[in-house]
Length: 483
Image 1 (tube, one colour):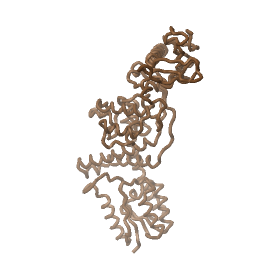
Image 2 (tube, one colour):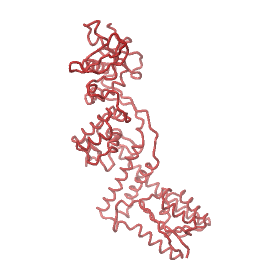
Image 3 (tube, one colour):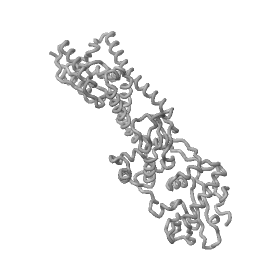
């Protein structure tokens, strides 16, 4: 008898057992009957579970073909051609390898195919239909996902911490008990706290006891907290209420494993830390304590003026001018710059695993035969397992990709300022202003803070150059008009 290797494949197991998991046994039984009929002796049965037919790198599949190429087997026996492969190109290349080694491929359902034009056409047609079923399932699932995203539905099975799902609308709503934890995670990361420290804090503050560094990394990079619902390239940016602002999100994701230059307890009380300069020498002014209050002071050895001002006074003046300018020039709105940088790093294996998980879930949902075979509990359990795989691979894929390019965002400034943390406000001011200049009061002790402080707009915030903001929201080409 001629030797042969039996190849058995199941796309998705998902924890099934008993009557709901007969596919491998059915395949082996049919292959064994075919082998007896064609006088083949099966010397090895290779079974691959959770293996996609569109994956040409399957280890078992390649081993079965290699057994023919090395002369260990004369033929590869399969239940049907779709079990062999759901990619027409991959299948034909594999068949050419088998034939080049003098081997054969036999299907228990479709039979054997000769090299005649009719035989080749029939074989190629069956393989094309196998690929067509896979492509159609993927396309159908993509259309369904896009429709759900457009309607603002959250289609993932796992609800992110900070939200719960409205059972009526299927949309996310903010969980008032856990959402503050998410905000604090972003705020802590924005000032440079490490992933390990964040994971420990979140566990101790009521998060999952299994929270690890990868969990908080996923949280900080998850655009769901901006109010987005996304699946692949389809994005709805107004799907549900946001928990964090774009500014805080950007600030938390801008930290690249290094501590920011101003993260001490004293400077944490000053809004303009790192932004204030001395008019006398042009050097950055440091944040220090004076009589129990934080302030900005010039410590340059080469400065003769050594300007200084209380932080609460300077901060209040800057905020007052800012509000006056915004409400006068661009009433009640402010533009937050978009994220134009994009990391092109992409992990091929993770992307492929995610696509296969999505495909397997779609095939399962669209297969009416499976629904008839399983009890409702078994069906729901299997669907939950498939959905979990989609979520997990999607999370892994998100972490391999950079944030997508985002357009400039227009927000109601008067409202959002009150919701921002001090870190978010610092982030905004660092983008909106290029400098805050302070003059010394030593030569004119009667000078007001308005006389001593100048604010310069950062390039890109106005079409005009050299714009210095004045107390009433007007502007000047000179920093100190009252001097």
